[in-house]
Image: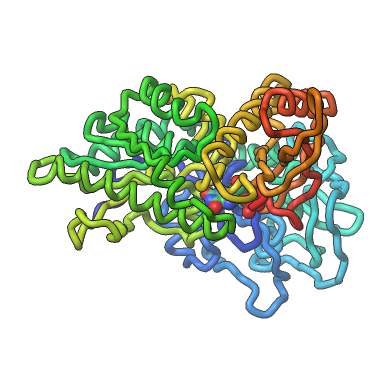
Length: 529
Ligand code: XMP
């Protein structure tokens, strides 16, 4: 079974050993911000296997355990004796200390949050050029009181006698705090000092090299066969498709299902701007009527989601079957399916080597029973911000590359009540006004996303023109977030909110009220349905 990247050259790689909690992904991103390639491996991976990857350096992440807890993850001493530079952070620091003969006390001396670090050896490998007093982010119970032999103590706090140590000869370094979080004011500098000074790496990794690598790998993988890619209008599938298009040109066909639930202008962006920027072959299926018919009379949000999902698969597979039928029997059989899987999806689903084969769903006639696709997942090593950079380098329009998250079921789950064409048109107008004003105010980058919701089942009383009206309220739901798991409502300037409200109530018939959602997540979800 061919891998997703058979020809990908391996750049200098820093392995980030994941000891749990959510720190490893952030560390891996920070290493890449320092333009050094990084990959995450689980702490259960045997050291021999880690070393077999020929890492240029290793970082041990923080984690929720105490080194004294039963079943606490540990690390084999061989890791520190292989001559590979190692940087331990928080839990990783304590593991390095105990494994190499230092002392970590289970004192109950806890430090959480912002703490002052006293640097005791300025000019050291890690702390060169940083202040003697600096703010760092702590989160630990146990504390190191004695560094292992051969290490120099380079920092302390009021609570912890050994909060940083270094052994230049063996290229082993550690800090008790979290340099990867923003609250550690010189954290990125310290991390870069480890990478460039400690491990001798050069900042050379770029998303440009990803494009070259992937183009070569995809060409080798696909040969003369054909590939299909479903475009959703979102960033990931657009960038994945553009990358594959660059590699195999007309051997790729994209399918875009227009379910009629997109926002104003979005379908046109895919149909015109994306095609113009990439030259991709695109099959657009206009399925608006089919979706509206299937959604008729349905108000329950979960029911709507099920119907939209089901219809989507049916329409997509029908299009797929047509493309396959056109190419069948030739050397150009359709054997590949492009997916916009990102690195966090890969890490969260337990790693994976990129060799998965998936079966197509078979609930539509026309597909051979045993049809199997091989996956092309050119973004599976990238974080979202890196995907956007790749998209930019590939020349995709900003409207696509910088697009905020938008749910698969589209406006179907932003109409509280039955979904009809009239209501969709109304919501599209209101949403377009909100987006226009937020963009004009320069607020797009401050907001994670801003659902605009139509309370179609609610009638509100208004006075417009000559008399009373019974219209519907529109809800604005601007949120700030890092990953959509939690969110806060965005404190938008009143004058921007005022402009949006005036324009929507003036310009959108049947809307006589605009309200602002001031709920964080939890308890409220981002979407209303
Ligand atoms: P919630 O509403 O659960 O949303 O706070 C979290 C993130 O997921 C998006 N979302 C969806 N995306 N299908 C999707 O593809 C869905 O059914 C769906 N529901 C919510 C939402 O926009 C937010 O970014």
